[in-house]
Amino acid sequence: MSAQPLLAAAGIAAGYGKKEIVRGIDLAVAEREVLLVLGHNGAGKTTLMRALFGLIAPSAGRVTFAARDITGRRPAENVAQGLAFIPQGHGIFPTLSVRDNLELGAFALPDRFQLGARLDTVFALFPILAERQRQIGGTLSGGQQQMLAIGMALMHAPRLMILDEPSLGLAPNLVDKVMQAIRTVNQRFGTTILMVEQNVRYSLPIADRVAVLKTGLKIYDGPPDPLHDHVELMKLF
Image (spheres, rainbow, N blue to C red):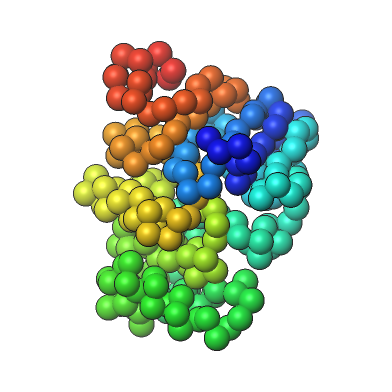
């Protein structure tokens, strides 16, 4: 971990109405790191990500990005400042073409003349999207829709990408392709990755560090190696 993390959360509590889902969460993500957040259903993973990105306001704690306080800041402002969020279910516009989805993903570009270069970047990473750029997004396979969602996020060249269960609903062979694409984004573009997952088998190999949530609390934060041991992993679940 670098001395100054790119994203840091301190003492985060969040939930819905009077129901608190996560509490006392400290989390830090270093520049260019892949941080994997694991946990069972109901552990609070999605709630935490939503609080970090500004989709819900934390009831306690502080979030900083690039050393600036962004606690409760509107998602549109976070996108403009270099954050991206890919929710469960891909987050594409299913009735629009692949290209239209990508162009909408570029809404935060400060210079629209960069649009062509960003499209070239995404198409080089995902050639299938270049081949199908006129196809309606909702008719793509699940794996291709996830690639499109990642491509939309890449259109504004984020410094940090938050992904909420990118493997959800995908066949194992597609999960592997999506995970490798995420790692490629990290390595090729230097994009910091904060990823929530339940699919340990496919997500653990691409992680630099792992945090585990259980019933709203963080119970592990460290290297992925110990969690390759099934017995050790089950102790945390």
